[in-house]
Image (cartoon, rainbow, N blue to C red):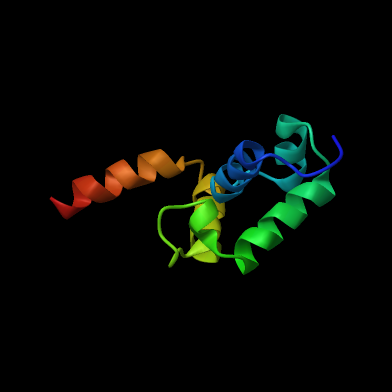
Length: 89
């Protein structure tokens, strides 16, 4: 691909990462190198996150860990949110 990765692709990489996808799968899905995926994730962890998300105080690592745990249990992040809302009622 070469050059700077467009913001739309960087956002998609972060979204997939937080959904628990592997680095290699994200690279394949977005037609970028695995090292590029790692660099984007690292940047998101270090830089101001406003360019990716609405809130600057974003629990990036915690959300990734939760997504991976849910994926191991065969659950999707979206279904977890629905289940949590149901349990609160």
